[in-house]
Amino acid sequence: MTAQINDKLRLGKNDLDIVAIEDPESFFDFGRFGLNPISNCSACWRGYIAIFAIDENNNLFLRDLYTNNGGEVPPMIHGVKP
Image (tube, rainbow, N blue to C red):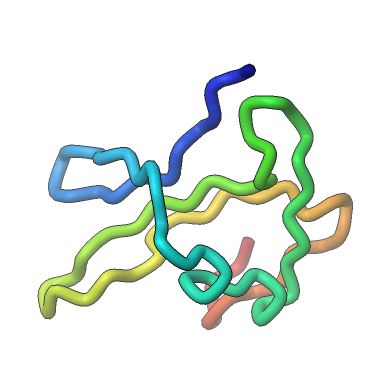
């Protein structure tokens, strides 16, 4: 089996691998943002890689998102262009 590319939590200059999320469907809902990630290689069956960070108020936020949107034009998310 091919090793999967993990999501990351960026803390300062360090990246930590996120290897498990208890309830991934409620953690980040791609459909809510008009995304439909599709796998394009065996190293990333989910079709996306997410990098999270913690802001100055200790809130977790999505910092970077890399997704294969199946050829569809990706939407802006909260005013950020793809």
